[in-house]
Image 1 (tube, rainbow, N blue to C red):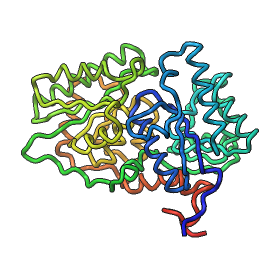
Image 2 (tube, rainbow, N blue to C red; image 1 turned 90 degrees about the horizontal axis):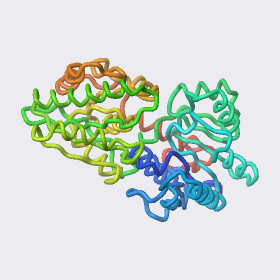
Image 3 (cartoon, helix red, strand yellow; image 1 turned 135 degrees about the horizontal axis):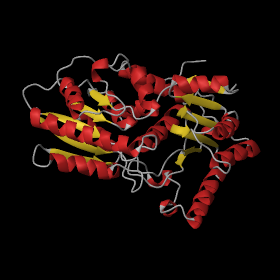
Length: 391
């Protein structure tokens, strides 16, 4: 006999930083769709997102026309579209990511909070980071909304501490990044660790970052030059082929320009594959599993590599990257600075990955279990359901 799901979980509306052509955010949708059905008994999870490769079209409720621009007509259409989805939902869930850093005086988060209060439908947030806030005003507004959320699963200790200091009154769980459940959501076990390449050619997977709002332009140029030249020198020195992952294909915020620069710098030197957000989350995951080592700026490039058992170096361009490296116990030998200054530093780190036997201290199965807590420890988790102890 199957456990009876809570009415609140029947048709959750999942919101986040979606529709921006980002593999990491799309992976949150893939995991949420699977986990909400598996652990909450959701029948019709709907995503406030335009259609993406990896979800059934009926699960994505936003019209892509509203993402063309930030013009007044498109913004109005975008808000009205979300309001219509909200009206048909049984609860609202913030699904993954750094969605609680900034909030202006007129924000959809305020709309969500008011609707929840008026309708009695619960609000939840799973796999999220809270802060660092971009301004004191944003902090005040966000704390007001956060205090009205019934259940929050955070992906890092710093977020839990912020909520505790703010006197958050709801159910708080120190969980993990939603992407920890990606293999299971795709119907796979956590892969075996990649063996160190022997006498054949190794494959390096790379994600670069097209836009960094927290770095000055000279720093961005210096970092870009060091990473691209560092990879080129590795290819000249070692038998290495390269897969370029374009984790964000957004025309303004994406990574295509810098990824094209990397590809062009390697032309004729090695075999080059390119896989992008347009190919989908599963395609990026499958290609990541074929890599032997990794160099990543995109946080979820590093998380995919970690889950795939692929040794990697992550350039920690934001605090969330440092938090991830600390959480998994990344070996010191694989660390790079926020702005590598010398291509030789990059080449040395990557060459070391080919032979270094050190691995992150945190078992990947434990990382996945922490991600699961976002669902199994929620108030509407199925009684005696999958991964849920009897009560």
